[in-house]
Length: 285
Image (cartoon, rainbow, N blue to C red; front, top):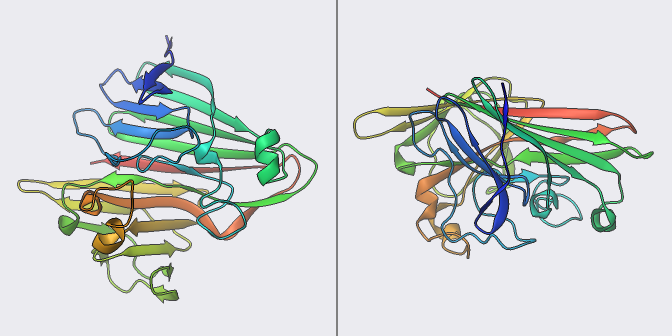
């Protein structure tokens, strides 16, 4: 029988703390629908959150998994990465089941969002944890009488012990936009070894990606797959840019790498009444 999970407080914000029967844990804030923590069963924290991040109302949190909607980065007229990550979401349900824990949050348009983006919409964010797996699903429905386009992402900050010991596998032969060099390129090698500022949008991602981190006595392998999202963003600010970010420690770039499921190159088009669903799944081997 499922057991309901009450709302609690984390960093001064309403939150839901999921705990699966096998010990897997996750914390999501209603502020931004923001996943703040994911600890798989028998493992350590897998998400990076900056110790200098703000949790104030209307301010984006640096780390975890921000929900990017309806605009990625500065690609349109809205504020960077849109407004969903700064809004207060509603809890639809949160419960512990026989072998998992699940939370569903919802964000709908209101007078404030329509001043920024004049469309009626409903976003639903579903988070499921079980064992060493995390599923994050983002769904959008057009609730109005006008069609709209949007770009979106699950901006996952993955925790690292050492960036220099980290690589990403599964990107071979993919086209990508290099936002540092401002040019389109093709990934020619099997392993991406992050070095310096990294900001790439990989297109038509179909295969699973694997983040590998060679630790002192073992190798961490995090398997990353996505459905519904056509692009994947890999981002690390590097030393120089990180030093300019007020909400990051100067050396914070060494402990994180963003691997984001996204729709950027081809915005999602939704007719009135239509819906879209995208998912990112993380599995710790």
